Amino acid sequence: MAYIKANAFRHRLMSRIDALFDDIDILISPTVAWVAPGSDLSVVDDEGTIEMRFMAPWNLTGHPALTIPCGLAEDGMPAGLQMIGPRSGDARLLRLAEAWARLMPLPGAEIQLKH
Image (cartoon, rainbow, N blue to C red; front, side):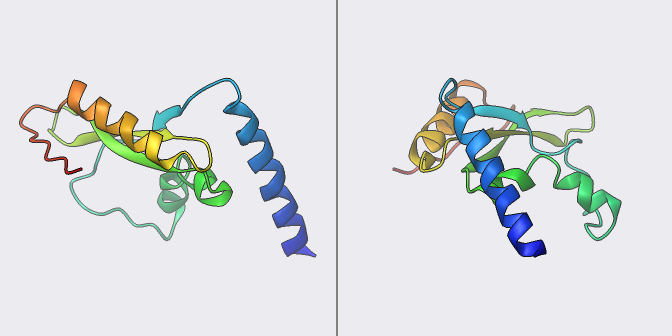
């Protein structure tokens, strides 16, 4: 019974997010709630739950998502920008990310894109 309820929730969530893309091209959000740490964080406790806050919905619904660096914190560590697209919109999402990377390069970053 729990599986049936969870799957029904997943389908409702998919439908609601699909409807968002009737009016927008992509969603943009932080990748995580902090800039990159200097060492790996534990993902088995509350920090792991927080880390997945912005990423888990897309894994659940099948919407393509990617992350790219969008700036540097005071300590030089990168902050991530997440782009989410409509289901089956992978190619367009990749083109948008490539355009972002070309227009907003990080200092010292060399972009090597292959086609």
